[in-house]
Length: 243
Image (cartoon, rainbow, N blue to C red):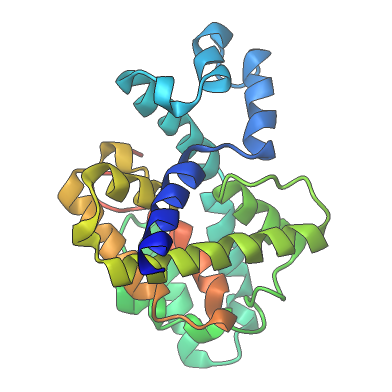
């Protein structure tokens, strides 16, 4: 049973990290029309071939493009966090949230304890999963390479489901141990969780994944909105990532 869970987790790491959703597919249609990146012929292999047939250079280039799509939503997500600061009832948590947003906007990679200090903000109003408004959910969906073109009820359901799956994968990875993963499995795991690991050294990827797992495995189900936002909070300024 344990072995089957590990194998499933590894398969999920590979599949989820590189499979574009409807949102990405729609963006790629714009690309083919020359509205987003130009040179439509260059992108055909990404649409028509599975990753197994990509050349090493194509793997890097295509994953860069996917990451550029999701990174476009990062400023909006941070702005949403700033806007809810006055709605946080606890003065200490208001200060921590303002401090965290300022650090990230000024290029600082936050420490694990900086993020976990805010877990109560994400378990209920105003940042609990059931309290997120439509614009927040659309931005978070883009950050996860999920389609934002759904009614709010379905957006919330998809985000909950996606984050819960990642949370379960995190628990399985923590039990397995990061040291048991190959270099490519580590990079795929990091990419799935928001880090553009194609340009980060393996040892730094392992360090980052360790930070992610420390946060994830500390969270309860009611606090998974923080894990969802962690895609932005923990990845934006990590050393070695391309701006």
